Image (cartoon, rainbow, N blue to C red; front, side, top):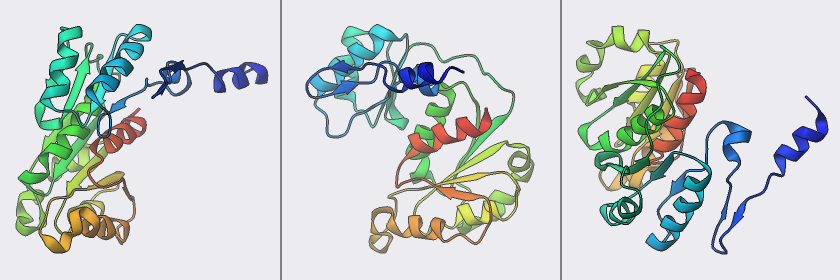
Length: 229
């Protein structure tokens, strides 16, 4: 490919809003458009950014959202959907699955499901086939072993776990498939809002385990999609 063309792609324009510089050409560079992370932004800012994205694209993904934000987006784009458990808003149809390979998403407990759903909806929005198996943590590890066929048939596995975060290591020790650990902020005081499971996953002795940040279901779903494709 022409080097001048590549350099031009790296410096494509953005839309200036003052409070945000919306990267309208991200899809051309990396294959996925800009995603709105809601925390720290006002509803006005989120809607304004969404407006720019949807003027240059036919789909939108909004993470860490709430009903107030959804109400504002829904009033402008009637086809918006709120995936309440995942705290995600989407505008536009989910694409057809681009591969038959599947992403398996596991949780240690029921309380980890919201973060797992963030990963699930993200991966589905990016065109992946997703399977979910929830509440199979190490406190009752026989529940995990009953799903060995699903674990071995997956192409990539996401594990969302709070408390001690041990599930990611266990899964990494029984499968050759890549495992993405998502430490969650679920737990009692000594879990330090996710720091303990984060350190457990980072110190995993099982090969093939990588870790995203605390409660970053979106990051896990996105990275799993890259592996899956």
